[in-house]
Length: 127
Image (tube, rainbow, N blue to C red):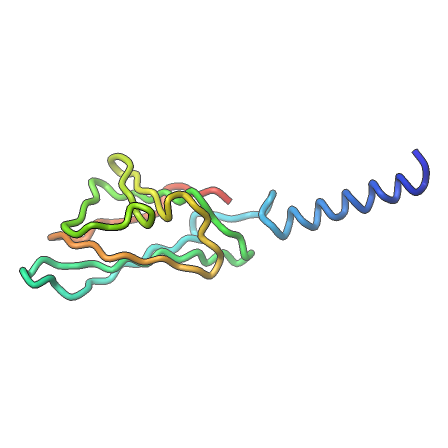
């Protein structure tokens, strides 16, 4: 290997390390980077309570997080929720944002209508 090819290989390796640490390959994230907040909204005209859910990516490393799954029991709503925003796949497994990445610092929200508030917590993510 010549000196120039050794230097080139070292530069490529350095760039890969820098890129992977800043863009998520090997970067750290955890379920606690996703915050799920619920608040009670105004009741519907028929008195059924509504709940506003906000799901926020608060990654301190600026990492987009995808494939966010939430423990959600038998989640259902009297009003339709866009399935690309929040969808129950099976008992206790709801998918957020259609599995697409939620950028750091961004949030999505939706409102559901039911007689009681569902406990929602993050079950799994992909960095």
